[in-house]
Length: 483
Image 1: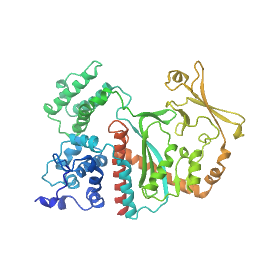
Image 2: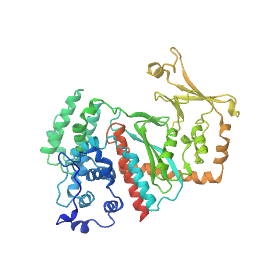
Image 3: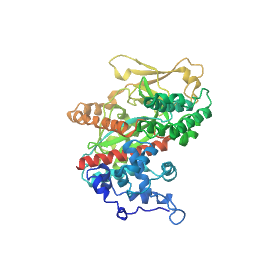
Image 4: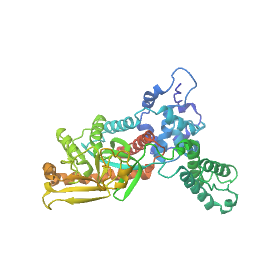
């Protein structure tokens, strides 16, 4: 059964909140700005309404996750802070004397209550509706871009992941008391995962029960991170890596293992749509979905601003058909022209190379044809043939015994004459200057809300993290503009 929140007026200590949580406190402002009752409506199908024990109030559980997104803390740390921080208790709808939840409840809430809930679109739509209600959204332009998030479980082995986190914990302990080193459990020296897990458990037990420094703030965070890894994620560690994460490319020489979040944002810096994909997905292919999601959220879209990744032929055609202005510079390497197998080879604008359907990037390129005659020129991309020989998708792509594997693109910039003319106008140049705003938003997500690294494994976990982080930054932005 869903347990509805009790009014704070039942507590004789409720007046404390008026003393220690000022009106300009961000959490008080969010409480006043947002009616969180929509959480009951969205999650009621996940609860038994007339039988069983009372469940912890779903609004309170949701707010715990929102606090995690705002303050970038572990489950254990966010619950511990809610024990003594009255601004947290006020935000959570608790009386000052109320006891807090067990942090393991948050894991259960994520897995049992939020599965199959389209939280990402729902929370973005709520904030866009709030921005419209507050007369904040006035522009008719959206800025589009993608940002990457590294997988929590990268391409290291499970044992290396545990070793790394145990090492950080030991380093924090030694910085406080070098003498503790002699009393620490002996480190595991073999390659057996179970032995590494056992060592980490001994290390955690020693620091919590015998070291006397487990409550020191500099120790708490690496300790809790190692505990979560061991306690909550042992099963995932045995799988060695995030099952959904994929290799993406930031440039020709730089790759990452994880996910991409494709964003649309207004000139007022309110995010209106997001699509979260695995890391290898092409940016330009998400444009139409971002536009349609922004419109569904209530945004009137007349102009779309993006980089060269969004100027492919399909997007130019879509924009023209839907009477949209696409402010995205053309790159002759991105144009679709007469190239073959368009769906199997996608252009990565950061690296300036094509990527095959298996996720392998070309290693070099060469231009062929007469210089200065665009329609006669081709860009030929060369792939690592050794990878092609072993590729599970080589059938129909790589010819057995071939010494090279190439892919050619005919340069036909004349097909984009209208866009070339448009990008030379003053209107295009002025509007394209707005693109920096979304780069700043990506930076805010990463550096203030922990969006640089996934907090859990799997695409669903990444979508939940994205939903809470975007909800948080949108609320903060609305509060700032509303002031």
